[in-house]
Image 1 (spheres, rainbow, N blue to C red):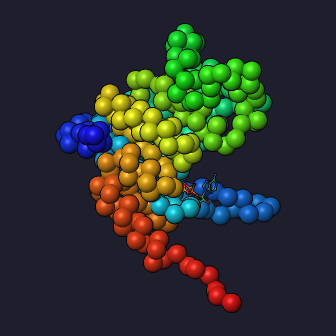
Image 2 (cartoon, rainbow, N blue to C red):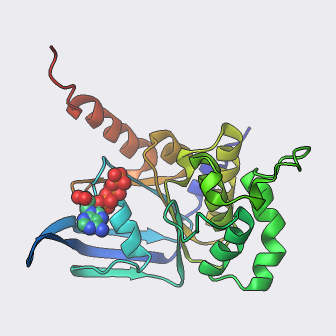
Image 3 (cartoon, protein in one colour):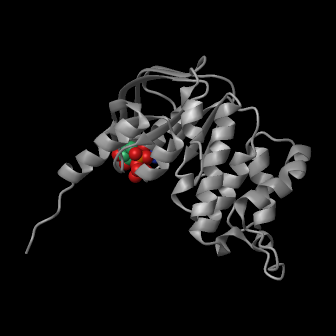
Length: 258
Ligand SMILES: Nc1ncnc2c1ncn2[C@@H]1O[C@H](COP(=O)(O)OP(=O)(O)OP(=O)(O)O)[C@@H](O)[C@H]1O
């Protein structure tokens, strides 16, 4: 079977959708009465993302991946440097503005509106979203998770619904996905990959933050490896992921042996 990813990757990338030029991002963290300290989360990161690319962000915990994603989405200000994002970016993922006390059904509407869909658009895509999430199981109509509050969902169910909502968006030049593919079964991951490919083919740029090297390898053609806020490597996903894996093998402390 042909590898869709290779087909897309073979196409020449298009116009720039995100341009980062020596971007620095810092948080101010209160340390006590009147005091604060700065956490320098992203340090001088530069890259150009183009239409048609799916770019994975990889790096150890606290390396700045989510911060960079938020900045690309326009939700986090930069301290210095220039960050340009074309059109309407959409940030999707575990932090998406869903409400745990509301039912899955209400959250589909809420999430759709938060992503800029009209009520009519949400209504017309409702079934598509729910089908994609895989939460409505034929023959199990007596227990429809969509009518239950989201707090009763497993983390995998919640992640699937969030991804399904976000995957229904249209017309975004830049789609940012945080960790959405880390959960879900093989079938869901396959459908997610196909959808990301479709979004990419429909002209946007997709950024994906994932801890799973496999998700990045299977979904992205390019990867940015962040380490302690700096861009350590930018290149073909296979190469960057291999270098990252190699470093985690050699740099992960094993702890003292007793
Ligand atoms: N709201 C915040 N206030 C203060 N510091 C923050 C905030 N968010 C993140 N940080 C700090 O910024 C740095 C980068 O965090 P970020 O969440 O971007 O990393 P990450 O690579 O996405 O991590 P993970 O893989 O664990 O999700 C870390 O040192 C983190 O502690």
